[in-house]
Structure formats: C-alpha cells, structure tokens
Image (cartoon, rainbow over all chains, first blue to last red; front, top):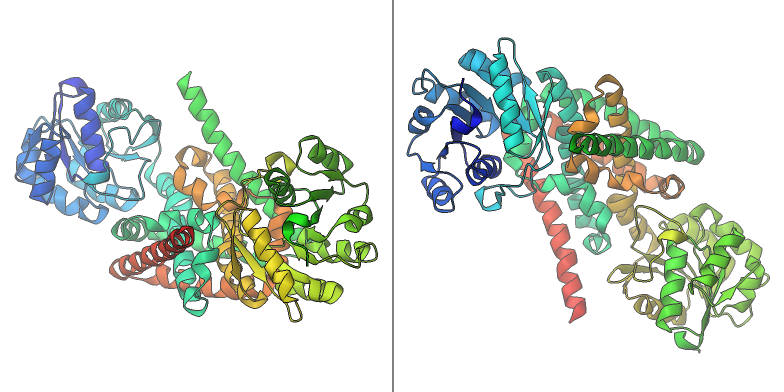
Length: 295
Length: 295
C-alpha cells in the first residue's frame, strides 16, 4: 500500500478547512500533489495561484479521478450529494475517503454506505471566527486534535493513513466512535454556539430598550458570545446534524441553570466555585495531554 | 469646593478593583494621597510597600477619618455593613462617597440612605479573570467605561468629582440610572456568568461519561466559559443582588434558545445570522463610541 508521501490528495471544497489542509500538504511536501475543486471557479484559481493546491480541477469528477486519497471539505449537508456525484469517477485503486464534517453519526452513516471500507471520519478540531479561503492558514491545525472516527467495516489501513494525515497537518490523532464524538462535540462546541447566539439575540433585544447597552458591554460579553460570530450556515449544519445530542444537552443545561437561579447566595457561591473547578480541570487535562504528547 | 488633586482618597477594600484604583491615583499623582484599609492586615502592608497607597490604616474608622473622598471597594454584600461601621468616623467636610459595586439598585438604595447627597454609584467596567491585590494593575481602567449612577438627592458637585475620578483612572464617564444600569449589566455580564457556569458544570458532568472530553475541548469552550473562571463570591454577589433582572433575562433567554432548538435548518441559519449581526453591531457601536471619545 502507498505511503502518504506517494499519494495525490483530492480536496473537495476550498473553504477555511479544505484550503488550510490543502495548503499544509502542498507546502509541507508531505504528499505527491494536491488536486482541488470548489463550486466557485474563482476559488479554485485562487488556490492554484497562491500555491494552496498543485492541480486545479474544473469539475468534482475530474478531481475525484486524480486522487489516491479523497477529502470531503464541503458543508456537512452537501457531503452525501458530493459523494454520490463523484462515486462513479473515483479510481478503483483509490485508498481512502475522509470527511472533515464537525458531526459524524448521521453523515458518517451515509458516507460509510457509499464508500464502504475506504471511508473513515476525520475531524480536525480547529477553526477561526471567519471562514473562507481568504482566512486559510497552513498552520491552522498545528497542535490541534484530529478525531479519527472508524465506522463498521473501515479498513485498518485507512485508519493508518488517517493518522499519517493528522501528523502531516501538525495535529494529533485521537480515535473515537461516532456517538461519543457527537456527544462530546455537542457539549463543548455545537450547543455552546446556540448558547452564544441566544445571548447575542437577547442583547440585541435589550438594546432596543436600552440604547446605551453597547457602551457597557466589555470583554465578558465579547468572549462569551465569540462563537456566535462564526458562519451561520456552519452553526446550522452542526446543530441540525447533531440535533439529538444538542437537544439532550439543552435540557440538561436548563436544569443546571435553574438550579443556579434558585440557589441561595451561599449555595450559588458553592456552585460557581464548582463550575470554575470543572472548567479549570478540563483545560488543565487538555494541557497535560499536550505536554505529554510533545515529549 | 476642593478639586480632585487636593483630595485625600480613602479606599476600603484592596482587592483587584480597590488596589488597581488606588495604585492609579497614587502613581498618577492625581490626588493628594491615598489611604487604604483592608480586612487583612498583610494586604494593607503589601499595598503600602508596593506604593499602591500612601497611608496604611489599621482600621476602617482610621481610613474614614482621613478621606475627602471615600471609595467602597469591598464585596457587594459588605457595602452596607462597612458604611454603617465608618459613618461615625467620617469627616464633616468629606466631599463624596462612591461604591464600586457591579450592581446598583439594591446596594445604592441602602448606601444613599446612609450617605445622603454625598453618595453616588461608581462602576468601572473592567476586571480580570483572577482577583486580589496580586493581580492589581494601575492601567486596569484605561479606556474602560465608568458608569456614574446618581441617586435622588445626589449633589451635582459629587457627580462632577465622579467624572474627574473617571478621567484620573483613564476611563470614560457614562451617566445612567440604577434600574438601567442593572438591566444592562445583567444582560451583558451577570447573566452570562451563570450561563458560562452552567456550561462548565454541564461539561463536568459529561466528562464523567466521556473521559476524552477535555482532549476535544478547544478555543470555543475556553472562551464561552471564560467568565465562569472568575471569583465565585463575586458571581454570587452579582447574581443575588441583581436577581430580579437576572431571572427576567433567564426566562427570555430560555425562550430564545427554545426558538433556535425548534427551528428548521434553514430558519436556524437565518436566526444564527441575525445573532451574529446583533453581536457585531453591539461591538461596533462600542468601538465607534471609543473612537469618537478619543477625538
């Protein structure tokens, strides 16, 4: 079986994630070449002109025919459609198909049935507030976790390639199953987007009554709502393709919030101290794992 | 009437806010001197040794007797008690009493009845994740808003002094009434603390089921929950002395969240785009006002 270095990688979708990934592989010389396709012709040309990709493709089919490894970096809700449109053009000897979607259960079930043993989920846990090729950065994934999500039937060699890919991006591999992946990302990413958006909408309403609201808003408001500043299509994709987990967590969240709201000042202080400890402990566990990996 | 430059300022409480304020006044030479008192004798000594204050006081009464201007920087729930304990020691010709509490309606009503026309609320909108004199910074208030909150009967000369004080701190004055102050700060600060704490507690619970949760947590979780990392006593003080507004906003928030949770993917995208606009517009309005002030 070919090593990553001997492979041509075909990237479908050249937004923030697709372009950053392509750029890192091209500039790092870790693959034979990177073919790229996007719905927008200008984006493909821009990617070629700036050295993000080595082959510009006019069609998804052309891109599919070039690749040893196929990486689907289109919006989550287009993953299945894109897969179906290129399935006939993919080479018989293509080795692997990965998707970069932020949710895995629904999309993975569908992609697994299309691609069989060559498919595994691949989710680099990195991003920026603003998307698009204009914000692409070959070092976007440096030090970040790449969740590798096998499905029943995924070939072991595909998982090995996924791990090589994570290394080539400067990231760290972590295997997880789709259900666990979606439960955890709902908790630390997808549901917080809805919370941040709700706080932003609430502040927008309150501002109508109190026009001086923006003047009193400081760092706390900016940080708590930061993830509401991301692309709306992405937030909607994440919440709707991970709806079961997001709604489960929303119910739990409301119970926790109600407990805080009804607590006495003394009990509230205890609960807030516990919340701070939970947060510190989570951030510290991540940092410890990072240091361990570096050694 | 004395100008700020001719006044001795007495600061009660030398935590993050009290010590930072004292330090700026001392180092900026904008007042005659700064007397300081804290419950903890070592804190007072440390403040004197590091040049944060010019006079160390053994008792709150001693500190009160020195001041032309009194600044209450104790925890919100100790404001009334501290005021009552020093009321008899304050000079007849003392000019003004300000409190730095983050909530104004409840505490202001009580302080106004103790101090009469010499009292106004003063709330510099600045802070740090970690409190205490060890984190004090004379430039903490640079460019921040200082809400000045008159009560019925507050003397106009007291408000003028409050504005001079805001300038001396490097901040910008904004007059508001207590009800508006508390409604707005509940929305952009106090309620978001409870939200961030609820998300942290929720993540703590989920981690028990999914031990790899910390490894997948990235910048989004860290930022959304940042304000949950502040001192628990402060969060409890803010939420409990601004309970009416916090509970009102919690109900509105849950309605907004439910609307997002039940929306179709298409409607959710529209709502998330609106949320992002609300946020951008609030941050832009603040930035525009800042630039205007600088001119």
